[in-house]
Image 1 (cartoon, rainbow, N blue to C red):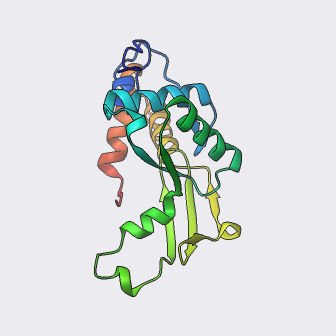
Image 2: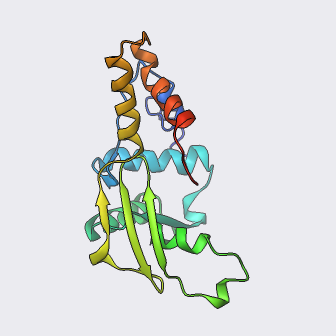
Image 3: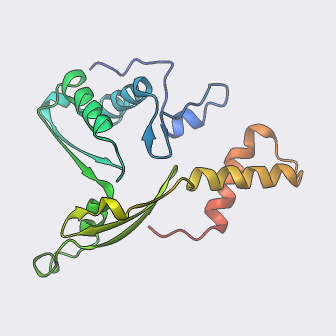
Length: 185
């Protein structure tokens, strides 16, 4: 299997647990900023974590509601040209979230209409959906989300001189956020 021997590149918790390595985020506030890192990320996910041969599988990817057509096209280019996938569907996260909220008996009775509040690690969106389509002109974009809250708590801990070693301050801030915050899933 190709791609699994990228020894200097880690993702997810594996990357966070290596404090001596430089941590880079290919996505900022919901938008891909470093396509080379993003492609390496996709490679790790597909080959190392899914342990899949991409040319044998169709892929469903999600995108933020304000994703540009250029980003969508570049994502498709990577999936088709670098990974040789046979098929790809890119859906807006809010539409899939709304569909996931239905129970099976409700599907025939309702249209895919509602408002989704999506607050992730890098961005918060309020997205109206009518009959399965995002109403783009009414989307509200707030560039504050989970990572910003974590960094804010980290700064509060530093300002109060709590005595947390610098290498543990980010994990401590995350723990405080997860313990004391109220989060709905």
